[in-house]
Length: 331
Image (tube, rainbow, N blue to C red):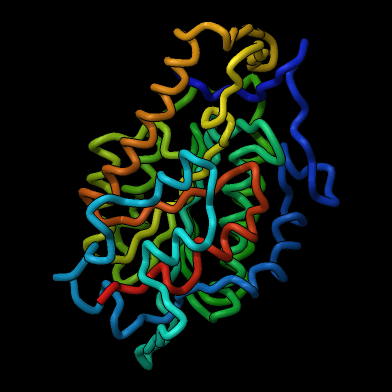
């Protein structure tokens, strides 16, 4: 059962997404001005632009060795707990950690951003599409402040836009404008059919396949991913450091035991009775299948998957998720 609807409500009509920003567009849509305004918040985010002497890329033999046998990524996702302590434990962070860097220029940063129709969904604060856009902007501004070359791939169900890596604000603004432009095209009743294969196509874009020695951050809900998508990620990880940021909405993780919700795609509404065990079971099975598929990315490929809730403040989460110790190889 696909649960990628534009809005979910508990009353006689769809629930309005709560807006927490000074901009009325936040929550449902996000503009260039909104994304530019996140520049100040990005300065507090730990981000690795320069190659570490102990980085995964310094020895391809050790790629993925920072991952424990049983990943903790979806523990916090399934419980809704994204505490910093969990990520410190996963990546062996301690107060005594000391990081050494090579005396080399900042490496290129590629930001891959999903703005497909499946991202146009949220039950509180914002839609996944907005959370992904915010996360991408924070990465872009942090990389810009570090002086790193910035490139990007922004995609939806119809198009894939690539931005060549370059230093300076021109490349950063090109990616920001592409994100805001595709975000503005999202509708509850889409003009374009859904294209689950677009994620794989974006990962296999010519610009990314030419990347080497770069940091690639993929921000998506990973709907439609499968063996071919994992193969594309694995190919990128052979020559680059790759991190997946999974945008999700926590609604399915804490379903009510009674009552009903109204699910709408803009014109057609469906009543879902939570008192029926069959409905709850199918929703839980759907969420579990998504989680297991993403765990496979970590276990088999060694690409860390970080969970980003659309129901929480994006900048606060990114400060935890993109702490510099995320990239640290455990000794």
